[in-house]
Amino acid sequence: MSPTTVLSTGKREQTKLANRQAILDAARGVFAEMGYETATVRDIVRRTGLSVGAFYNYFRSRDEVFEALADDGARRFRPILRACWEQADSFEGYLRGAIQAYYDFVADEHASWQSQRPLDERHPHVSIQTPEMERVFEEVRDAFALAIEKGGAPRVDADYLAAACIAIAREVGERMLRRRPIDTRAACNFAVSLILGGLPALPRLSQP
Image 1 (tube, rainbow, N blue to C red):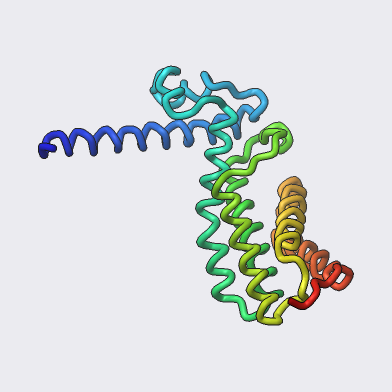
Image 2 (image 1 turned 60 degrees about the horizontal axis):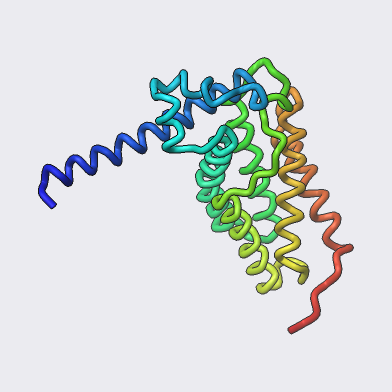
């Protein structure tokens, strides 16, 4: 492959990345201002300078664009989550640190999406589980499993526990974003207290 071909290929890849990012940036603004249910692919494309045909080279639908935004958020949150585990000195410390970090993160994300419309009109009424979101789940589950193995947490089902904690954190977080002012610390205290208060009632796993 000649140097000219290499440079040409590299430029094409950079253009593809730039176009994809332009679509995501445009979609974030459109979803915030118009509401997810109202926004169309054409609304997104108008802000990019690309053609509708070019849009479909990167995404098949409006839903896929939103999933990409959700995936990007989870990807950016994973290093924060890992740092919470590395800095924690106990299971409770990790749980509280992770949930507080999550609420701070989504509050910052919400500020960048904020518009005059009610929150329910700005977000899709669909269940999304992207590859990066699955990796976040795996990080939480593995951290819980290690804490249980070391005796730092009750011996319960780590898989179920991770699913329950993430569900509680997510649902409380959604309500938190509807309140003014947004109080991430109060939401974290509520979620952590609910989780820790419910742990004693969970069935214990048998010893291996």
